Image (cartoon, rainbow, N blue to C red; front, top):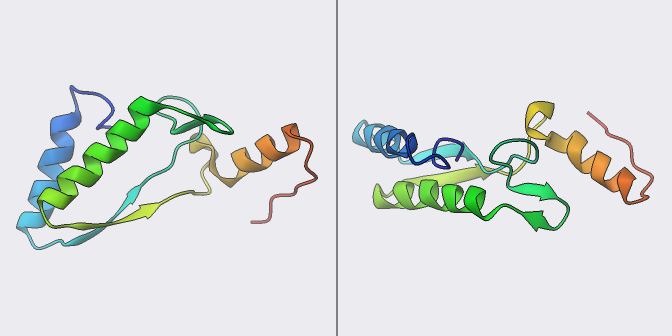
Length: 102
């Protein structure tokens, strides 16, 4: 998704998916998350970046062309990408009493 958001690196997405399919990969896990910084899908609660979603759509489309199924990871533990901690921060900002359990 990150590479697909930039039109100069988008061909790398197509190439990687095509090469993977050529050697028999038919299921792949890919990121469908990022809640901070460049290419964030969700900028703040209920506020989304259309360009980031178009990039994710491109990845899904390229996989489909190769008859590849994708497992979309919707969250992670790496704070560089927001992660569960970002959702806890947003919840606390909204006045919720939350803790992060790892």
